[in-house]
Image 1 (cartoon, one colour):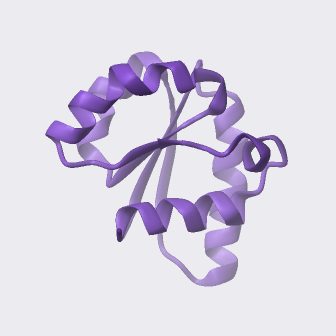
Image 2: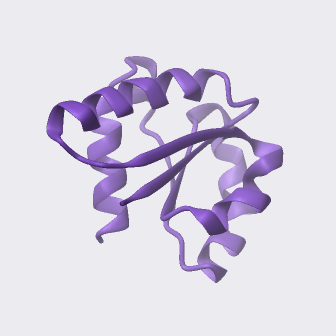
Length: 102
């Protein structure tokens, strides 16, 4: 089962995105585990997930998080700000699954 980590400033806005992604996964019949955390939890959590998506508001952290993610062979990217703003759970889910299977 794919495990997707979402990371944002405090884990609040991404938790709404997680709900939309889980709804999209259920509609598609895709089993997936999705968790939202704040930036301070990234280092502790990344090893337990298949990929990490950063909220657009913390895209500046990508350079800080990338070395650890690469060391653990975990893909990491920033969520498209339009998809994030529109809470497009289906598109964000599809993008994250492509990231894992790339």
